[in-house]
View 1 (spheres, one colour):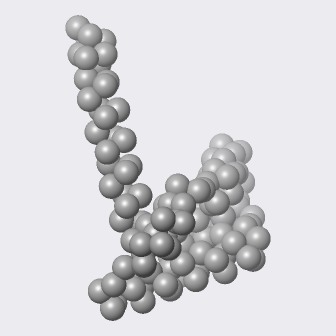
View 2 (cartoon, one colour):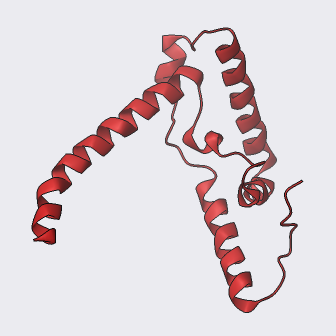
Length: 122
């Protein structure tokens, strides 16, 4: 019975998830952000460690996007339509490094050893 309900509701969930992703992409494009820009390094130390492993140019581009988005938000403005069309909100740049950091943390916990980087929230 459960598998029947799952098969019956799966197309509805797929449709709803595609609509939600499109809505999120529209909102991110308004400010020129990427989805990975929404991760907060002050909240999750794994994100902070993953950011240190990225190339400096990628981190500078991330900071510029965040500053531009904050500026536009404070002014109650959006990017021009021409720039919104060029945005790529689902172009991932942080996921690989973040997955690697989380895998390393999991391995260290399993082995019972300390982590090579600080795990304390400032």
